[in-house]
Amino acid sequence: MDNELFQKFVAFTTAVHQITSDISKDIKSEALTPLQYKILEYIAVSQPVTLSEISDCMHMSMPNTSRELKKLSEKQLCDKITDPADRRKQGITLSPPERP
Image 1 (cartoon, rainbow, N blue to C red):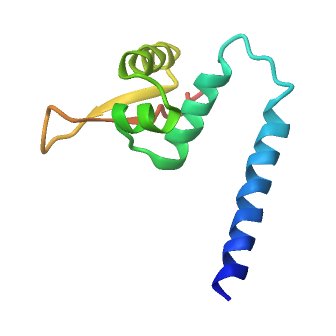
Image 2: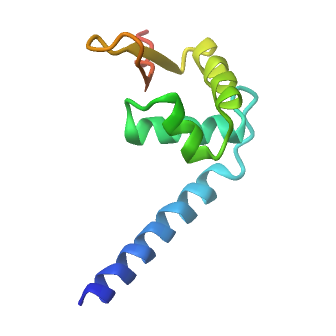
C-alpha cells in the first residue's frame, strides 16, 4: 500500500513539473529570467523564506541569490520583511499586487 501511494505521489509531482515546464517554456519575458521566475515560484509556495533557503533550493551561492533578489525587489516583485522578534532575520515574500 505504501509503495502504491509513493508511486502516485511521484506521478503527481512529475505531472506538476511537466505542466509548469510546458506552460513557461515558450514565454520569453524581457522582465524576468528563467532563474528569477523559479525564485518567485519558490517564494510563492513557501513564503516567507530566507535568503539561505532560496540559496539552498536553487543551488546558488548566497551572493548570487542576494543579487537576484535585489533585482526582483527593484522590479517590486518581492519584499524583505524584518522579523520583529529578531531584527537580524529577514523573510522574503512576494510583493502585494498593485492596485489600479
